[in-house]
Image 1 (cartoon, rainbow, N blue to C red):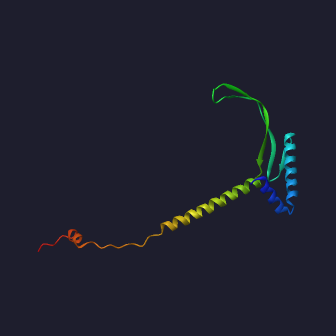
Image 2 (cartoon, rainbow, N blue to C red):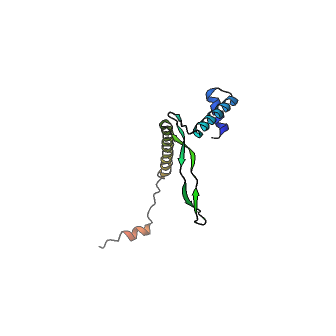
Image 3 (cartoon, rainbow, N blue to C red):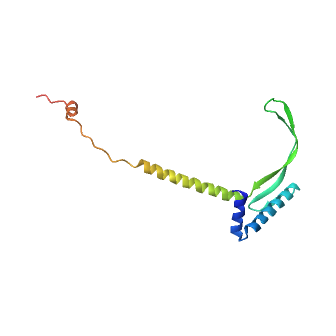
Length: 136
């Protein structure tokens, strides 16, 4: 889902105009960025936590030459999903898996229906070979 679709969904759920929904979303994102940049976590209980994470300086290698490189220390944004968010995603996943399995079972049952059995009779010449004549 892209930003414009998210704005449309917000407008529909909150009865705001699309312009007001866009302003709301922009203000929310701007506030989250400002707080995380100031090294303050943003905790949305059940949804998740936005925070900054420090990454110390390290030594890496240039994959082409193998030459050692110094990777500068930095701070990166991190998001940790909350239990409600994780539960909703897991539940949706299991529902899709169950629907997929049911569809596969239905397809397998449809393909496995026995075809009408054909009966064939043995030829008379075959019967003679199979059943030897009795001696008198």
